[in-house]
Image (cartoon, rainbow, N blue to C red; front, side):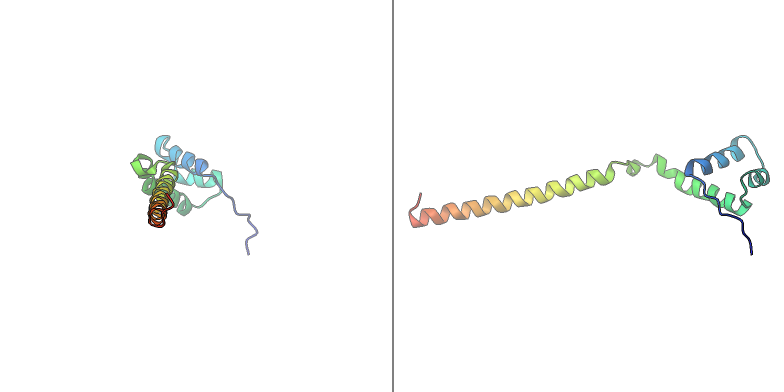
Length: 102
């Protein structure tokens, strides 16, 4: 049984390791030894970086997009509410006129 403690790396640390390999030509075996990770883990990080890296260039990767969607949703609800209120007020006015109140 291994008593080795599992290490956790931040996203920035993972990117820095992949960058060192790609730009500085540091061998994966050296990085693995230096950081105490297996080459398989390194290659998984590299794959994830390449697969998700395209998101940085997508227009829909805007961090404010969920907020913008929520604002549109709430504006739609508000417009519907205003329409209902206008219809109810119109019905009330028509009823008052029919009863001779206005």
